Length: 275
Image (cartoon, rainbow, N blue to C red; front, side, top):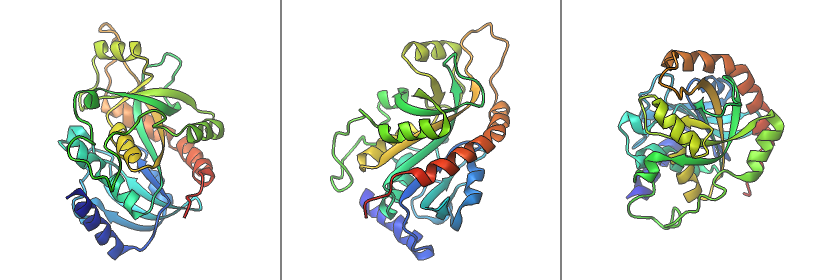
């Protein structure tokens, strides 16, 4: 059944554009303006059969097929999250569609809270591993019947984030490396949870990305993920700071020039697909 829903989405997209991307790019909270650099066809999520529609603020909900910094890309201007009420399988459906369109490399971006004391608001961090509380609790996008045409029943998460791509982003952007903690949201994390996640070796915390990584690895895609640190996570109940959506958007706007410069260097440098 999933194969049929993917095929239906691809067929509708093909009616609008015959473009075949080699890179899939997901733009997270506040990072969507990069899509303005794409030269190509923009398709609202709502126009694609079975495609989940973004309801989160700052997620435009468009799939753009075209050239970005000299490479053939499928760009999601916004994404969907578990906290919007979608199932894990619905959250990762766009990744499956972009792979079916031809993409072999997936680049994910997000806004995240910084837990590592060395991080500062405005830092860009390349993810090298993750810890997901929703997945550990059973919300794995691969749960249920497996279609062997899409990927294997059991998928290793060792090197889920391609080491070569991690090193490339680190070198080109001077980025820090970090471990990303995935929570369901939408409530921001209480101090006790931040302390637990930090004790578990996590540097960042956010509400996205990991389900998409799992689906991409199931499909055999190479994965790179980059977090923008938009706030410092509060780890004490006596801390007077109250995390807010407004500060996330403010920082995301401020970080855009650096993020754009990183993508302008990174996208052309990504390895070419074997076609």
